[in-house]
Length: 186
Image 1 (cartoon, rainbow, N blue to C red):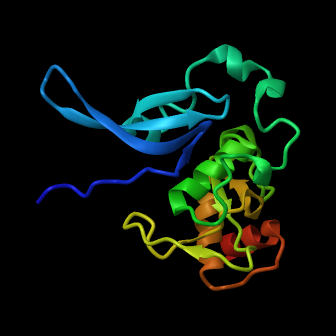
Image 2 (tube, one colour):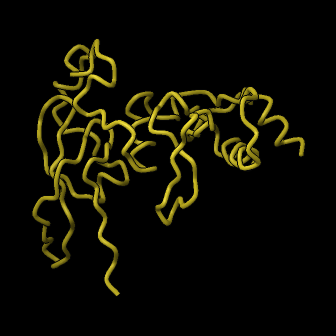
Image 3 (cartoon, rainbow, N blue to C red):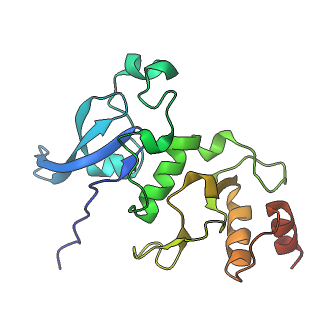
């Protein structure tokens, strides 16, 4: 059985947004890899191997000069909805998390939002979007998510797991620190 082909079109990976599939690359070993034509927030267009996009190894066009200054960024001074890269609500679970990372940076640069004092490791959906999406991807099937980065918080892995368990009980509207404390006490 042939592996299922992924369509990355429209997904955001850091500063890159996939716009179309490109010709595959053939390595000297004979192995082939899918490549994707992507536009960078700086305006450049690059072709990137899909696995490098998905694992976060390539997140910009590589032009460091174009990415050094926040003022050079096309989003500088704009609302995210004004950006040509804002795709609205029609994005996948993975693309929603990539959008959060693009908007707020890596979770690892934040402290855990629950107040435990540890460094954050992951972005967690808080369950606060009045119209959440439900993932249909096999790796995250049934997981709720939001296309809006404002509905996520940085959490340590264990806090994220405890929060997800608590959230699955459909209890929303309570401060996250109380949610985590209650989950640990249980």
